[in-house]
Length: 142
Image 1 (cartoon, one colour):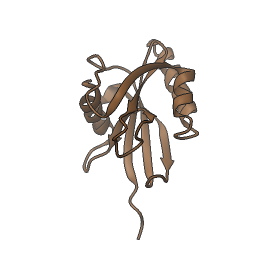
Image 2: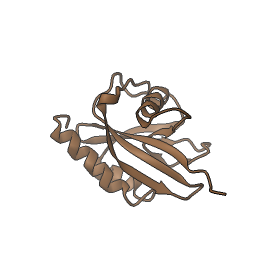
Image 3: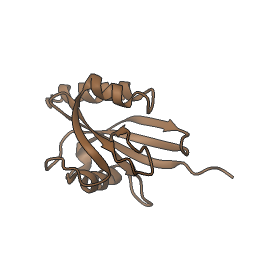
Image 4: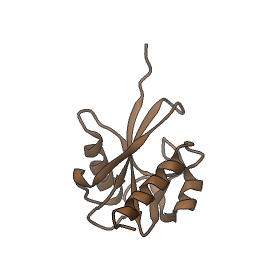
């Protein structure tokens, strides 16, 4: 019998060349105490874009539209259970990020700092972070 793969989405919010990351609380079921992007599990019947919009509203109090989401790529892993993370750059949002959910800290990180914080989570995170920052700068949202 095939093992269930956790289908997840993640958002990279870029402002002034910095990426917003959150440190997960120590009592979280997944990635306790680790730095992470914002997002979560895709619920039954949701598209990736719908899941990102829901997660950003729940975790940060932000409103995003599907037209402002740009797919960057997938990351996959096997621990603690098989998972797939569809990563999106968020070009625009309404509201100011607020810590509403499972994070003990929010921080706008320079690219190199964000890459260092997420490198151990998956070896392709640094490349996708750079892609998001470069795309934001090219779009006129440094």
